[in-house]
Image (cartoon, rainbow, N blue to C red; front, side, top):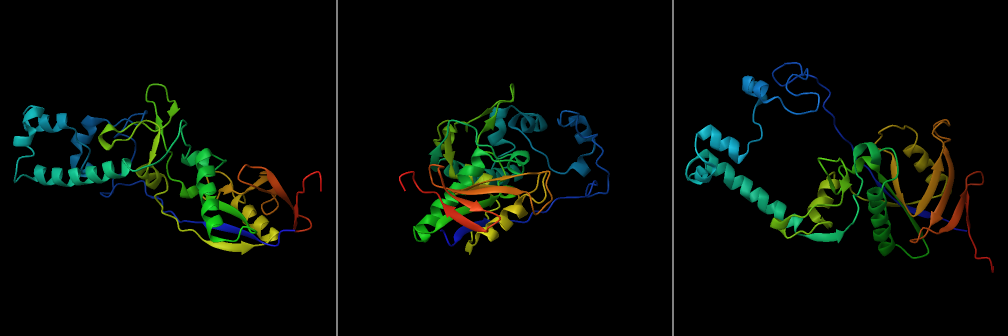
Length: 280
């Protein structure tokens, strides 16, 4: 009989902009972009006061200055110009990006799913990795006799690790970044920090079988893009979305690192029974 289950809870809060107006009081009615989400540049230029700053390319800057791109260092970005000051900042930012993107932490041959509509509604491979990493950390801090179960709230995963091909829409592993010395398929510190940029803290605590069920019930009490949706490690569970909130969890099992079931939680008895090998 397992007396206690240690779990890790990773939580967050998010703020969402609710207004449909710009800072100048103009209603956002879609006239600044087309049906495919592409900006309508003539409209942007016509309303530059409202738009504020927008992204520029070397070609756009050269066009604005009436020079060739090769002449930008001696014109738009010449010493003493505002462009030079901006370039100093962007070069510094690019340096940080290259340093972090060159800090390799692993490799993958698949796209690691972290998109909002997935991690808040179902199990994903990135959710599994995130939750399993928490189990690993917990096992280094607690006695081996304690089973570690982890819960990573889906809303704490902010982005996928990988790329989407523009022409096909196919999801592919991370692309190479030669400037940072990053090969294709590598997972960098930048990838991890971008995906988990809420920088959620971790908490370890003891719970009981009934407590574990209550935690999981909370995770599925509201469904449909909810940040509370649990990405889990060290356990398996099933739930019925059609059941009444608070009574949706149907089964809970403890699993080892190879995903073998080692114990089953009996919900009615609020107890855990360890699975013994056939010879026992």
